[in-house]
Image 1 (tube, helix red, strand yellow):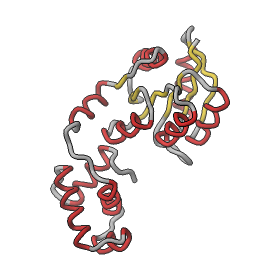
Image 2 (cartoon, rainbow, N blue to C red):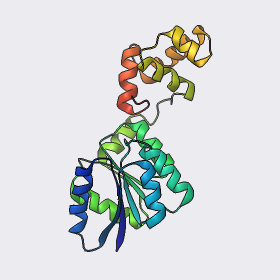
Image 3 (cartoon, rainbow, N blue to C red):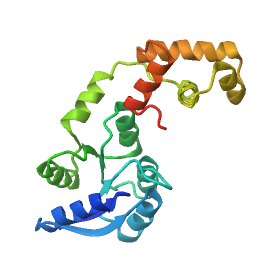
Image 4 (cartoon, one colour):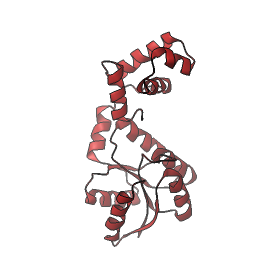
Length: 204
């Protein structure tokens, strides 16, 4: 019997998973959580075989929750189940310790097959997610400072304001912006923000 923990801040999603798991003779949903902090507590309490984890949640996001769980329980098996297919988000989730990454629109059969595969020690990515990763696998990653600059650009800050907030010169900010545009293949600042959001490099 595969014991499952379902983590999602939308009750409708959790209800759908409850109904789906109830039809499977080899699976049992033993606990639910509605945010990352609760996920860590429920994992600690029940130590399920497989956890289904959403990413965008209040209090603590899914990636931080995965990191916290895996730090305490290195053998934890976690499947990310999200609407988000940005490659940077996928990489962060896998680095945090997730074994699989599925989109919520995936067929029910794909979810059930993935649960069984991860329980057996395998790793899985949905085809759309694999394609997003492959598309950017040779790209130069943004540095932490460049990500900070892009986040501030997304917040509507001009170079002077960004320089003040990051305690760097305005010339340095201009240099970071040039590098960001080159790495993302962006035409301008607005285009860079759009790409950053789509790929999950930054969030709003």
